[in-house]
Length: 188
Image 1 (cartoon, rainbow, N blue to C red):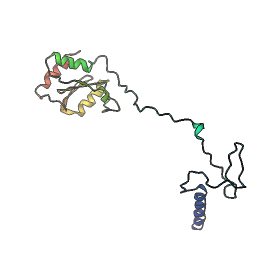
Image 2 (cartoon, rainbow, N blue to C red):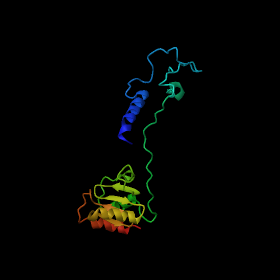
Image 3 (cartoon, rainbow, N blue to C red):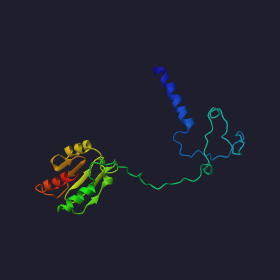
Image 4 (tube, rainbow, N blue to C red):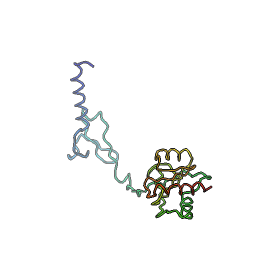
């Protein structure tokens, strides 16, 4: 492109913008009555007047409200969360919490928070999750996933197979943690 062609390109852009109605606030309806040079379409609706500037451009088509029908609104409900299955060899989170309770260990206010395992929650990819005030029990679909999370939590967790005990938000004294871990190790 040369400097001599820039004015021509600019004039062309201005012409296209003016023809397209760039910056117009109207909604496409003409406020003037159809002129004598406008044509009537077979539907009986007058078309835009023909002139040298608009005859080469197709007339805009506006959909009629009756042809589209009413808009239906659907309730905003998220799809159900599908969690990965826990391995058959791993105990369930509820089974672990029940074993703690049977051994006389504290597991106050257990809450099933398995929905937090999915993509809408914490997104950890666990299969089951029960949180208590003493310890949080995670069950993962495999040992590798459990190991990765246990390493992330460092010394604040304990892993056995696909089960991870998390003490991060727990009120369990460090001296009592081996008792929870012993009960977990005693499960199948």
